[in-house]
Length: 319
Image (cartoon, rainbow, N blue to C red; front, side, top):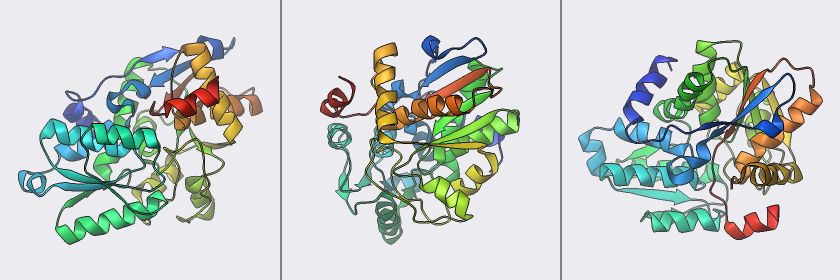
């Protein structure tokens, strides 16, 4: 991929369809030396950043590809994003979900009118099956992360960040398949290599970090986690692996109780209802800055990637 040109092109293409999400100061996280800001992708359409990548891919399709319909796989948020894009462009498609998809995300997909099918209990197997179905039908498969157009679309968060806070020093980004951090880091590093990119993962599913440490994509650890938006394996040959290896400066693993505390903090202090993956980035910021109190990070952004959380689960976690 050519950064930042492809990301700028993506931003021009998707801008009529997406929200420029707020960058809000998180005053309770400030110190004398550090300002902290929250990038509220939890307020994006479908309450997730995924709309950016899905729309960039859909808008790149020709009429023949659109006529045949598309296939995708998702743990929920990407499926919502694709369904949103399909509605905008009047295109048909099938969303494959793992059987472990959260009830809330499934219900939202159904309300959106999505054509959903189920396969497997790990997102990587669902992705493999969905890609096979697309190939057999001659349809376009839209990966949640392993696609240059999708990655470029997610990278448009970086465009907004530099417009909103040109002097930013570091960005904390939750990591699953690596599409968001791959796009953001590729863009920001091309613009300013000094910006630090910190990858944030649940200790129960740190597949990208385990792959980076192994020097290749591995099956890795996949256990149940509150961060259902980042759980699961990574598709073999994923373009995001090299992007993460090249551009991510530090990695942070957080435990389930730390994710819960992050979600609670965001609700108590900022009245924000977020999903577990957003709790991961806040928890990682707290853990990283505690372990590195002298880190030269004067202006920090924490990306809150989504707000699709089951209401009853959220009540149990924060009240």
